[in-house]
Image 1 (spheres, rainbow, N blue to C red):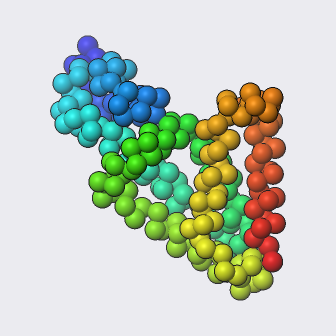
Image 2: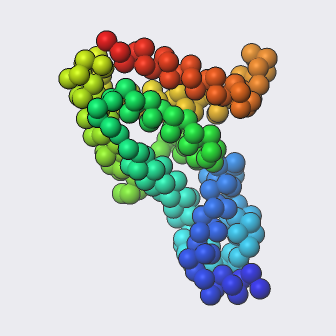
Length: 209
């Protein structure tokens, strides 16, 4: 019955396969993921997996491209008020924190792809240049802040974004190992809220003249 439904609704089938693939690749990496397991989780015939994506490589690339596209789409939807440049950076930080918190599979995909030294992302025309729009927006925010005297001049937009991404991901990707070494539950909502405020204050202090 599930495979018959899949045949009648190819868009739903593709979406289900991408969702299952994202979870499997995030958990097991490219080498450890199994197309049979992904098809079973998506409740469809494995032949439909190859029909939609041609190969395991094609499915993996599609999962990464979809994950990147969602992040960039949501970043682009952020409203930046250039009258409050520091508020814009704070908003981006809080969004990025919340996004990685709500999308742990993205962190898994990024770890998997970095283990492959970016092999599949390098082949993707879609991913190349996707961050250019955000880079331009951050550049405009920094320029406005420098002009108003609320942000010190000379800050590199790319360096700033990498810092925000690192602050947003490190405590999630390393929560279990850090928890044991530091005797602190880094998965606790209270601790993570405290962590966000700490990072926001640190970033603001670094940005301010």
